[in-house]
Length: 425
Image 1 (cartoon, rainbow, N blue to C red):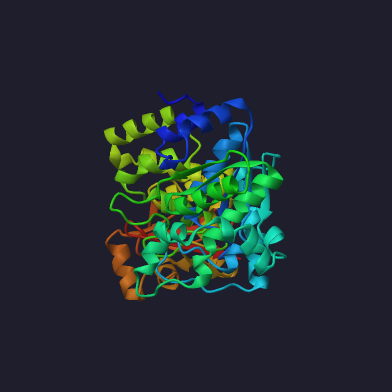
Image 2: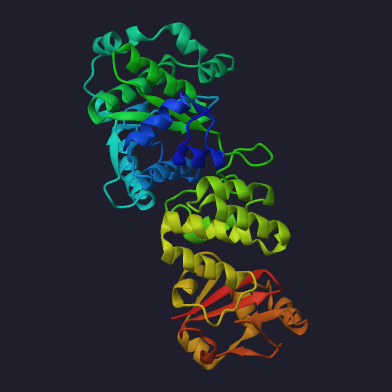
């Protein structure tokens, strides 16, 4: 019978264990006291994306359970690229680009893992850059057979592809194995975690440590995060990456990405990506199944993820902005919500003097992009399809200074879903 461990049991309940070297041994070690573990992230951009959240949130679970996490940013391995999950080779990054990317990633990691002393950022360039080829072959290469390397799924998949695999990428698993060995020797790291496509690389590190006379270490992977239809999770409907950097993907768009999670995916996302306990996720899922049209689970998922990545204040604003655009009231929204909306909907900036004099609402619809012509605008207003700050507007109505919320904003709408923001300055 498998040994019980609260953390491992929780990971299993969330569907976060795919492969594990020795569950009983790891359960016993976790019970004995704090463990140092690591997860690696290649700095191929100056921001992580939602696909990286599974690794970061898993590290956070270990930190919250009293363990210590090492976040490895691959300043060295990022110059090569991991062949796992790829059909072609990455472009090599120059040192200046890598340094900029590493700096950007470190800020995002801090927001998710917290500011306490439960984690540390490490860069494998620090212990790899000065190692010579002959030294590396002697200390690492001689302990690994080509048979083992060819047996890795990531390598076999690339060997069978039309692009093949370069020697550079072929050696990636040796570099990652060396990372685990170095962290084991110098930082007391006993556990490496990653996605299931990394299993071969993780096991290579376990084998290297054993062959070089190191202590007992462990490897754990989670399943790749896929949608119910089997496609990879992490991109928006348009196919773009959803980034953790607010300049690349705004908090509002980040919130909307999770709001649009499919019913078939939302429970799994709540379990694996949020810090909510399993019982609360079960209750949310039950409520969602009872009334799926209310999207209770998606709302909670979007709020929890936006809070985790961008902070509670940004999550509150994104939630209120979302409610404003999807049926909520406009008049009570704080100024920050309108400032957020100015970046998300069509915005017409107009001189305050024009508003003081009174602007025809037909002109407002045209200038804000909600109508193609004044004739089109008047027809919309005659049919009762025009709104300003939730109130229906007539064909002869005007936008006056008294209509401005926070003395600056007016939210106009055509029909049910077409919005524009008027900003007077």
